[in-house]
Image 1 (cartoon, each protein chain N blue to C red):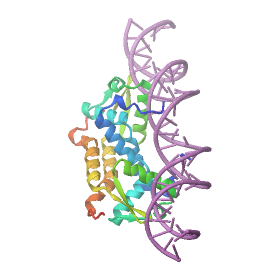
Image 2 (cartoon, rainbow over the protein chains, first blue to last red):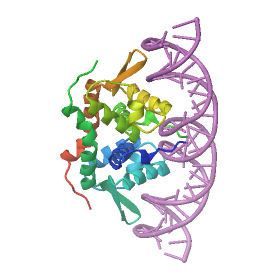
Image 3 (cartoon, each protein chain N blue to C red):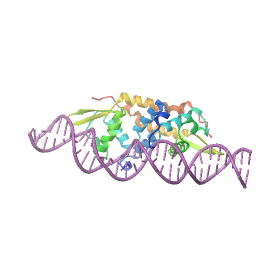
Image 4 (cartoon, protein in one colour):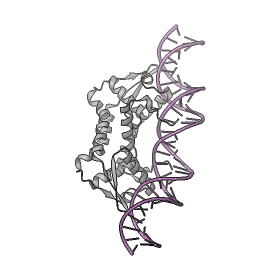
Length: 110
Length: 110
DNA sequence: TTTTTATATCGTAATTTTACGATTAATATT
DNA sequence: AATATTAATCGTAAAATTACGATATAAAAA
C-alpha cells in the first residue's frame, strides 16, 4: 500500500489533487511567495531566503518545476527561477473547479 | 527526517500548506465533489460512491473533518456528512492569498 | 589550467501517507 | 435478547515524502 489508486478516479480529480499537492508544503509556499515578491527571475538566493539545506530546496524547486508552476533557465553558474504565469493560471482554473463548487450549492445541512 | 520543519515557516504559510494538503488526494476531491453534488447531508453511501474500502474512506473523511472542511453527525446507525460551508469559505480565502498573487505581478520573466 | 561558485543528483534515514483486513462500538431490527 | 447494519479504530504493510551530507557537474574567475 501507500500507493494512491489513481485508476479509481477521473483524470480531472487526479489533476486537481496533483496541483494541490504541489502547494501542500510550507517550503514550496514560501518559495512561490518569494518568487512573486521579487516579480522577476531569481538567480541564486532562494536557498538563503528559506531556512533549509540546499539539496532540500533543490528538491522542492524540482517538484514545482515538474508540475509546471515555475520555470528555470541556466544563467552562467547559477539558475534563474520564476513563476510560469500561463501554467499558474491553468492551475488556478483547475483548482477553482472544485473551490467554487460552494457558489452553486445552498447550505442545506443538518 | 521526513518531518516538515514547520518552525522555519510563518503560521500563514503552514496553514495554506495544510489546506492544500487536505485537497491533495483524488479520493478526497471525489468525496468533496460528491457532497457538493448531493447538496445536503449524505448518510451512508459515500463508500459505495468511491471505489475504496470502508476503512480507507473513513480515514479520508477523518482528515477532511480534522481540517474542518466537512462535518458529520450521527443519524441512527449511520453518519451524515456534509460540507462545512463557513470553513470552506475560510479555506478559499486562505488559498487565494497565494493563488491570486499573480494578479499583483507582471510577467517580467526571461 | 586550477580553483571557485552554484546547483543538481545520489544515497539514505526518519516520518508520513495510503490502503485494507480484522475487530470494535453503537444503534436498529427481528 | 440475539442479530444485523454502519462506521470507527487498530494493526500493519508498502510506498511516498521530507531532509540533508556527500558527491558530481558545469560554468566563471583567477
